[in-house]
Image (tube, rainbow over all chains, first blue to last red):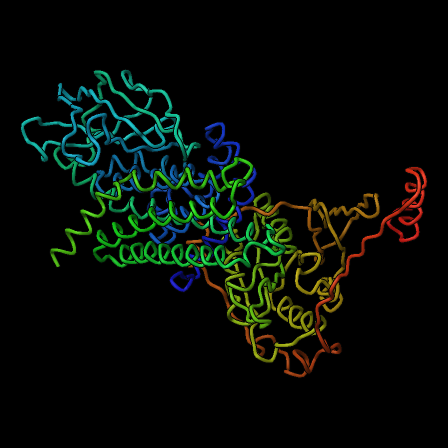
Length: 380
Length: 258
C-alpha cells in the first residue's frame, strides 16, 4: 500500500507513528475512559506541525501535501481516534477555509496561531434542527455599524470545548436563501460566546465535542470570512477536503482493530491450536485486511487527485463512504474474534468499535455521500 | 565561530522479507544508537552555533536516512555510495569514513553512536579515530565545552569518569545519553523538497577499490544462521526452604546472581 507514497510521505508516516506510539499508546485507554483532552500531547503536536499540515510555510504551516495530511490523520487515529478527529477537523474545516477564503489580514491574524497549535479551531455548522440540509440554518448575524450581532445555536461542535477560533455559519441576509449564508469567525472569550456542556459520547471521547451558543454576540465586521453570501461555498469546499481526513481517520481505526485481531488470533488457543488456524477466523482476518487495504487505497487516491489539482469531490465522497463503512465492519469483526474479551474494556477493540461508528455519521452521513456519489454517476 | 561537528550515521536493516536484505526506507531505519549522537551534535549547535555535517555509507537507496538527519536540523549531508564499497567490514568502513572526514576538515568533533542495531560490533567509532589519529573516548554521557577542548563524562561500572579532551576528537555517545528530538513536519518538508544530500563516489574519497569493500576487508562473514533458544522447565522438590535453597544455589551456579 506504500506504493502510492513518496519518500516524503513515508518519512511523515514513520515520524508520526513513532511519536504516537510513544505519547498516545500509554494514555489512549485512559483519555477515552475519562473523556479528557491530552493537552500535553497536543502542545507537542503543535510544535511538530501537526496543526498546520498543509498551511503555507509563509504562514507558519508545514506546507505538506494532502497525502501527507491523510497519513498523519491515519496514524494519530490508529492510536486515538478522538485526537485524530481533533487534528483532522482543525486542519481541514477550520484552518483550510481561512487559508483559501480569508483576506490577507484575516490570514495573518488567524493562520499562524492555528497552524502552530497555539489556538485550536472549530467548524460550527450543525444546529439542533439542521444537519444534512446545511442551507436551512437558522443562526443569524445582523449588521449594526461596524459589527454584526450574532445569535447562533451550534451543536455537535468537534473541538468545541477547547476551540479558540470558531467558524460560525450564519444567515446574514434572511431574504437571500442559499446565498444569504456567510461564515463569521468568532473568538472564544467574546462577550456572549458560550460553550455548552461537553457531550457524553459513545466514541471519540477524547474529543471535547460540545455545543457553542452566541447570544447577541458583537463580532467586528472584519471577521466575515472572505465576503458575505459565500458561506455555503466555504462549507462545501471545506467538507470536500474534510472528508479525506475523516476517511483517513476511519482507516486508522480499522488498521488498529486489524492489528489487534491478528495478534489475538495468533495467541488465543482453542481446540488445541491458535484460533487463527481455524478457517472461520482466518477468513475473517483475510476479509478485514482486504477491506482495510481497499479503503486506504481509495483515501490515498482522493488525496492524490487533490494534490494534482484534479476534481476529487467524487473520489473523496466514495473514500469517506467506503472507509467509514469498512471501519465499522472491521472493528465489529475484531470484537467477534476476541469473543467475550472483545466486549470487555480490558481489550482496546471495543473502543475501536465505538470510535468507528461515528465515522458513518459526521462530516456527511453515509446516506448523503451515497447521494453525492449517485449524482456523479448519473451525470457521467 | 561555532564548532563544526561531524556525525557518522548508518541505516540498519529491520526487515528482511524472504531472507533478502534489500536496503530501502521500507526495510531499513536510522540506527537507533546513532540518534543520541545526532541529538548531542544538534544540542551543541543549538547552544553554540556552528554546523553539523552527517556522513553515512550505503547504497543510494538509503538516502532517506540522511534526509531524516536534515529534517532534524543538520546542515550538510553526505552519502558515501559506490559499488566498490559493498561488503566492507568494519575496518574498510572506517577507512572510507576517515577519507571522507579528512576532506571535511577543519572540524572539532566526530561523533558516533555506540554501536549499530544490526551488526553490533562497536568497532567503527574507535577504528575511525585511530585512522584519523584523533583522541578517542567511548560512551560519552555529557559534553561540555571549555575554552580549549572539552569536558566529557562517561559512566562505567558505577563510576563517573570525567575527562578533559583536546579537540579535534572522536567520541561515541552512550545510547541513553541524549533523548533524540522528534521530527517536525516542517523539517520533513524542507529535507525532501529543498534539502540536498551529496553523494560521494570512491573517486572523490581518493581511495582505490582494493582499500575498501570485500577486497579491503580483513574479516569475512562466512555464514549467518539463526540461534534457536531452547527453554527448559525444571521442578524443584522438597520443603519451601529446601526449594528456596536449591533455587539460590542454581542461580549462583549459573552466574545469574553472585
